[in-house]
Each structure stands twice: as structure tokens, then as C-alpha cells.
Length: 451
Image 1 (cartoon, rainbow, N blue to C red):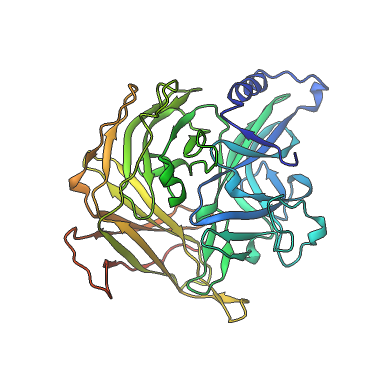
Image 2: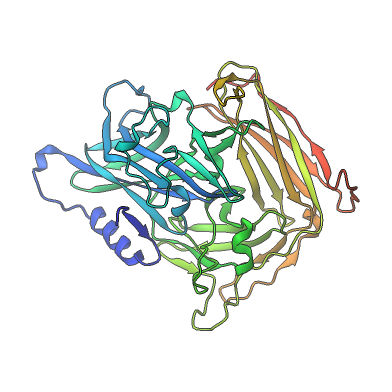
């Protein structure tokens, strides 16, 4: 099998054992060399409306200096035998893609640059294509669930690699793990209504852990774009989509893996459906919390079913930035529950790039638009119980109440955040021409720090 993938459910004990051995040192060899090993792998958060998101990895560069430029000193590289094409949507529910390892001097790795190939310059003959991909298409491309595909253009600034700030200690004779979370949903960006799609990777370094949450959603939801996430104060810690399989025993199953121990809100969302939240899910260190507390029964008592929304509204607007250099910019939709917890409902990265009619990048505009269709129906909330029954109650106070958050993220600087309310009227009666209430909020980051 070409790909070095690991499924956390079936290899949980093996992974724990491997980490235990690494943490205990060992290794032998010439101790005077004072080196350790950095092992790298990749996983993914769920995507939005795509069947495949193919990216092609060329190399991973690491440096002990957080400020070293791409052409500076101190770089070590993990160079793949061939640029490897990977479908990010394969890397969910505990599946990871092993990318390789490199021997490094003892010390702290503070910077990683993740280098993808450029569609325009790479020789297809050099690529190790994903077996499910069409090799006549661009190495980086997206396949839509509704049909069709588009090449993913990579901005020129990414040729030196996408920077990730990390803090990983490499000890003598030991193995340190770097797991890169590649968020396909936020990384694939449509440039306005141009029909051109950009690959603007959103990458996060996360620990390789054996703890997590396992459960299932109703079969009918699997094809509806349902997303499951573990959150703390509206920050998504891990997210996934359920397994889609012809095997009914696996269909709808999900695993949120690599989860640090802690207390979380478990959030279920899908376009056109009412949100459900299970609060206060405690994830102990080294344990996989199973929502189906009694797997011996033929029926999963905790299978999550979302109800269709009865009222929807549109949150729309623009984000303006007249500066020549534009930082990565996102819009998030949050909802605050009556018990005080805030959960993220949806988010998107924006694009300021402009294109001509032939699809050629022509420059950067000053305004980017966003649009979200949101459920106005009140979310359903239940506290977590280990007994296996979730008693969901309608959170009437949160009905139609959202916060729109615009975020500009300059590299190596504190993000700049602007917020506005989007409170929909549950009694809104639409027309044929305007079936949904539309709430508009515009943001301006022109005076924000440059990237």
C-alpha cells in the first residue's frame, strides 16, 4: 500500500506503546553526536462540500530559530522520495499520513515550513499520485460534491513554504512527534464569485495523542455535510466528518482523535439542520471516550440525529482592507448558549485576489465578501452523561442569536478581531423573492498591522 496511514481506532495501543518507548529514550548509537529524531505526519479537519481535496506535498523544512527567513541558515528538510499527492478528506476519523522523519541536533524546533508543489511548474512525471485521483488533472485540485472540479491555485508567497510556529523539544536519542493538522475547509478559498479557487493552507501543529471521543450520527446525516467538533470557548480543538461507508456498521461512525485531556463541548452542525451540543464532555488522558457506552447492544442509543431547520437566515457582508499586503482573513459565526458556553457554528477564509476572465491572477482587491446561511431554530443542548442517554433540551434563549467575528491574522502578530451581532427574527415571513431574512455586517481592517 503506497500510503503510510494509521487508523487510530485499530492502532491505539500500538501508538501508545510507540510514544512510551520514545519518551523513555533509548536508541543507542554515538551519544557524542547529541541528536534526536523529528517524526512528521499529517491529518485533517473536515471540509465543506467537497468529495476530494488533493494537495501535493514536496517537503517539510524545520528550523530551531523562530525568526529565520526561508533563505536563512539552520534549515533541515524532510524531502519525500517523490512529491506525494494526498486527498485531505482521507485524513479524518483518526487517519494520519506519515510523511517521514529527520535527524536533528538536540534543541527546540520553533519553525516549520510546509512546502507544496506549484501546479504551474511541477513535472507530473515526478509525482506519486493518489490512486483515487485523475493524474491528468492538476496536482492540487478540488472535486466538488455537486459535481465538477477546479484547480487550486497557490499564491506566489507560498513557494517558500507555509510557516507554522511550533515549540517541539528534540532530546538526545529520542523521537519527537510533529503532527500537522491541515484544515481543508478553511484552506480552499473561492475568489469572490470568479469561479477561481485558491489553496491558502491553514495549518496547525498538534500533539500526537491517544485520547479522543468516538460516536456515531444517524445514517441519513452522513451525506448532509454534518460536522462534529470538540470545542472550548468557541475554539475548535478537533473536528471531523463521519465515515461514509456501504458497510452499515461503519456508516456514520466518527472519531475525534489526538485530543488533549480536558473538558469540551461536542458540537454537531449541518447545513439546513438544527445544531446539537453535548456539554461538559470530559476526555481523560490516554482514553478514547465512547458515546455508545454499551457497544454490545444492536442499537446505538447515542446515535446523534439532527432535526431539519424550519427557519433560516443569511448573514452577509464585506471585509475591507486597503493595505497593499493583506493578512490571512477569516469570518466566524459563533453562538452563545444560555448556560454561558460559546460554540463555533461556521467559518471561512476570505480571498482578496482578483482574476481576469481567463482565470489568471491579476492582483489584490481591497474588499472581500462573505455569506452564511444559518439556522434560526434554537439549538438543542444536553449535558454529557456516562450512562449513555443524552436528554436534549431546546435552548430558546439562543434562538436566532449569533455573533459574526471577522479576524485578520498577520504573520507572527496578534490577530485583530472585530465583532457584530446577527440576531434573526424567528417569526420572519419570507417571500418568493426573499425567502430568508438577511442581516448585513461590514468590517474594515485598513488600519490593522500588515502581515
